[in-house]
Image (cartoon, rainbow, N blue to C red; front, side, top):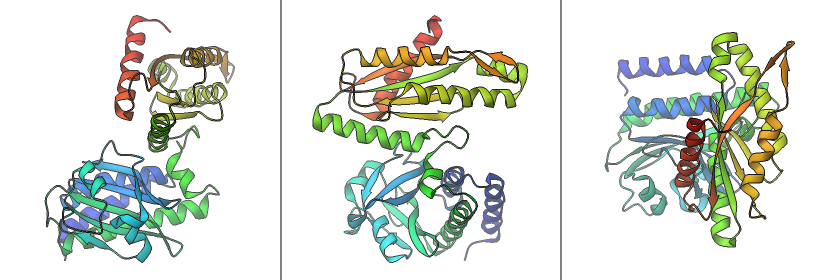
Length: 327
């Protein structure tokens, strides 16, 4: 049985989750982060079942950077958990025939616990705790993880009950702007890169940093700052095509996946469209506010085909532009 101290820790987690309200994406991310100290895990993830695959929708620890990773339901322990609706554990992934060995090696895990997440009587995903060491977890750890999975399941229930949006939308969209969140952005980027490598069609990635948001927040307050973020996001939507993905990655950071790029100057043309769109006056409560941005780009496959590397290239170019003062 879990110790009293651990049970108090779970109660504290439940209290913080209640403060997050209907933000399902925020709840999932908070839970995986708290899983690490709760049972001394090296990594944690929440995977949702989507179109016959298990998709990483929240990550912490050793699986950070794997948002959007997809596993086959038929060849993974997570998929078996969804199929049976029962808690499953693996003492050593190197010798367990039920696991996705390639995915385990990519993440670096040896042992894991997989707990079902049930919504309206149906298992729709899993909460997974991971360790780099075999034979890591015991019965008390499984009990504690089960408590957290029940919390996530309750969040799913209330999100669906009080909001008409689907669970997938709530888990993959930024609540303030409606843009894709980081999880969906990374998922789309992985898929685009895979298609580029397979079909030899060019694509691009933009990393965008809003200029001047801190000054607006300091001078006018966060209510005005939030209005500026929403307006900026709306301009990004207008400047992108239906085949592109615009995302809010956090705070004043945004990203866009441009796919496909048919013309050689497609990246430059997209950047020009964005600058032209955000240059239009924005007036809120009879007060004008400037919308400006620094934009860096990376081309696929010219700058690489690894998602993390492409983001790093675009990010470095964005910061170079910001420091130079060129917009």
